[in-house]
Amino acid sequence: MEDETKNLLTETAKIRFYIMNLIFRNGNQSVKIMSTRALAEQFDVARGTVRAVVEKMVEEKYLITRRGIGTFTNPSKAFCRLQKVPPKLIGIKMQGGDQFFLDPPAMRTLAALLEAFSRRNFIVRFLNGSAERGEDSIYELEHAYVDGIVACNVPHVFLYEAGERLPTASINLSGKIFPESEPFVQIRIVWNHAVKKVAELLGGTPLFVCREADLPAALAEALSGLEMETVSGKFEELRNLPELPGGVILAPEHLADFHQLLQSRGTSWRECKPFLLIQPSEPLPFWCFASPRDAAFRRSAEVLDGLLNGGLRKEDFPPEILEYELTEQNQ
Image (cartoon, rainbow, N blue to C red; front, side, top):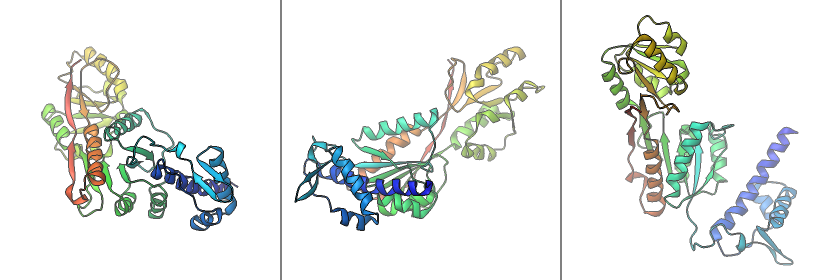
């Protein structure tokens, strides 16, 4: 029963999204939709499923039935009635596309992305299907009815299928390199500059990495590439070290405890430097890995604006690299 329900919901969404796209693309103009039989044949679904979707959308006033003539879209329900040409619709794909929830950092990331695209007068919809298999990606893209794609940390299989079909901007927070011949525009965020600054600040002294800090894989890889002694462990293990290291990468919730530890050892925060990935709530000194995330989102919106509205091609946008920076926050 669960599988049947899942399939029914999928077929229902296919028909609904098709009709919503007609309304969106035709603005103030009322257009006739295909017959129930034709829709069922085109989307390979049961006529009863089509009829249920159409009846619901008539009830919602998205559609108007004219006896003896057919069923039409309702211009009064147009999404962009004040614009002669509707704005471009961008599909947003985040990671695998099927997250159960978004934690606070992910919500802040999404808010920054939406802000960047709102400034270019785009409208967006979220693509929540699985991005792990090519056939799943193709299926979702064929029924998304979007003009372009912005993808953040998305598997390559989805990026490739999207780039083959639509203008696509990929924001890669892991710094992974794809060949320049790929069909999508690449914006990579890397840690190289920031970790070199960490090494300079430590001056040959060890770095302690707290497991609670939950280092991104790309940062851990960048740190491993430096000739610098790195030790990892839980924050509590730091208290038992006979000698404090030159620096510690902390979870933000441990910053206050860390400063208390320094005080108990008679050590300055400049001698044992705290590094954080996320802004803490306490007004205490630390060094922060400052993400170029917002700049990457603005650039991705600029890229899609150029591809969709500016007559530019994918070849006009070579792969771009943005760097994390290390900034001192002496509050």
